[in-house]
Length: 156
Image 1: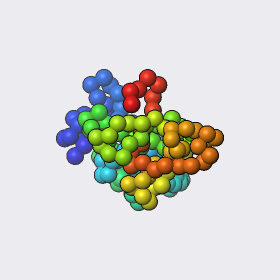
Image 2: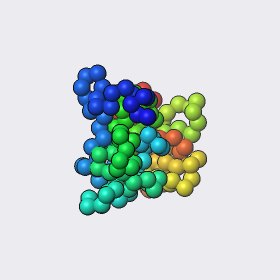
Image 3: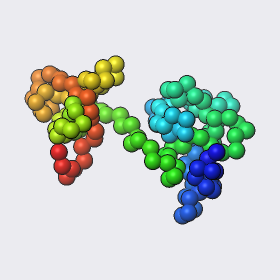
């Protein structure tokens, strides 16, 4: 199946591999799977037949196969070039500079990340109040629907 979608699975036209070697993956890392996109690694059991366990309950071999006898891998450290996946999830840390908004059409606002509330998708990302840092905000937090890392020089 992968061969039909991407052509030669040994690498792309530049001779690059498809990043299916999962031997260095650790708990908390994200891998990209053909089955479901980005998935967080929740357990690694190096001596097991299927040592990589994902948050979607799928298990993979160290060479990225869902089934040991599969002809091609289906899990990768980065998606193969022939796919156009959603951006890799980002794990924010307290105090990170971020851009936030509540609506697709709203202007991004610069803030400092405070906490994540994954059970509330409409108010998932907490930032310190009024664009200030933890010290200046007195610990007050405001929640937003969308959040992305802020890069130096990036427009609002």
